[in-house]
Figure (cartoon, rainbow, N blue to C red):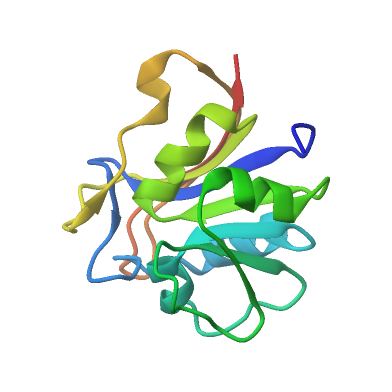
Length: 163
């Protein structure tokens, strides 16, 4: 159970915003394409609200949903009550933690890697995540800049590995 690699998949604005009204506050097609590539074939771990924000089950990935609501269920989703149960359900499979903020907080100490899309703008929103780089526990091992285009903000893809 402890050997399954855990990666946080995060899209975060420069000011820390990761969500607004239960959705991403931007639409960046390249980020969605990267998200699909990074999560394909993995076990995605997420909170209930993140699961409910998806358009449905995403093909090629298992969905483990953390919720404290004993009545909640969804076809195709596996349910965990805490991080340990989610890790047991994932077994030895690669784990992609996809949100929200509380779930990122639970798994940050367990993660080996963060795949970060940093939106290079201050964006309004109601859900924030502190910058994981501020702890000094992460080394930037990849960075790729993308300019603003078609009314979308500039962004940077980054890989952060535990120091």
